[in-house]
Length: 76
Image 1 (tube, rainbow, N blue to C red):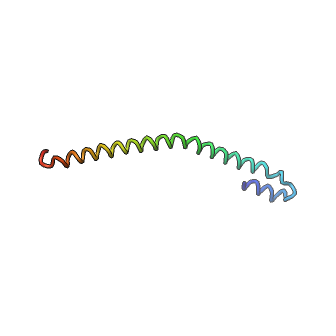
Image 2: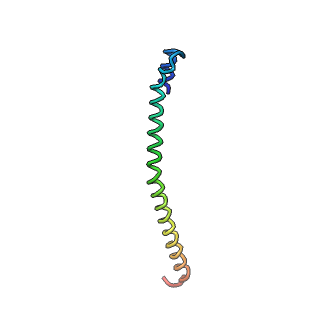
Image 3: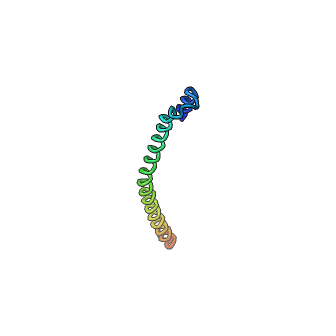
């Protein structure tokens, strides 16, 4: 976009078609960024859910171990 405004300042306001190349370049960069963000969101959600399930399982087993150790204080 900066390049587009540089061209427009050199060419003047009478030639609006002079800025279309810079605008197209900015739109391509924006579309590429959106595509990458959308494609990486799928594995991110998958792995986040998987980590959450593993953390729940670890909490369950650690709570069970804590209860087991608490019930038998004199037996080591």
